[in-house]
Image (cartoon, rainbow, N blue to C red; front, side):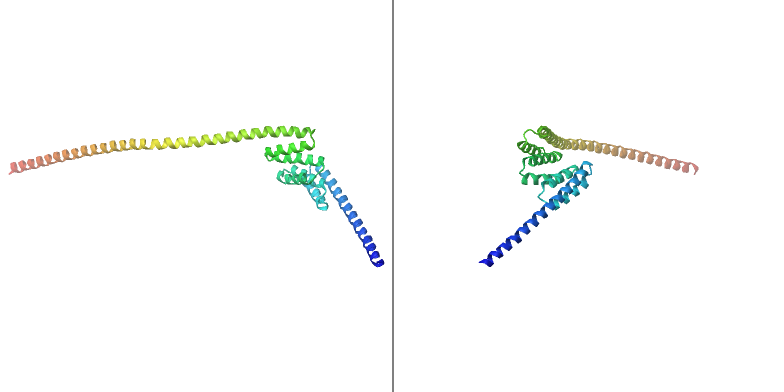
Length: 238
């Protein structure tokens, strides 16, 4: 019994040291993450958003549970106009953050990413969630009303575009219909013209034939006259 008791005591001491080392390591990791975030913040203030993003990503790699690195990383990506990427970071925060302040700000920023992507219904939902956490946030209230106006305008534009497309298709259909109606009429006119043209050609042909016959008769008469004259001449000489 004494032996086992000492073993347990040694194991307890060993376990204590392991826990202490783990805590110290976690503290060092957190401290390192904070340092990287501070560097990122300085770069962010200088509007060097891509460089700030690098520092925030390093901080996140050091301590993935450190919410500030994720939040600031989302901000930096948003400033780089990568709204879909920022959306993913803020979605992660609203799902895993319980602190009201962080959650409200994450919802607010998520609403902004949806606004930039013209997804106004989603942005409205995000601002409402933000106001549930912080009801007195005037920026969220303003953005909520702005998103509602933009949604209304978007719906009107879509309705107008739909109506224009409908009218265009209707006009095209009527044009084709009129074209189909016009075709038989044109065919009749063309047939009439062709008939008249043919009749004219026949008349001209008959006139030409008559002229040929007349010309042949005259030629024959002349020939006969000449022959007669020759005959008389021949006769007279003799």
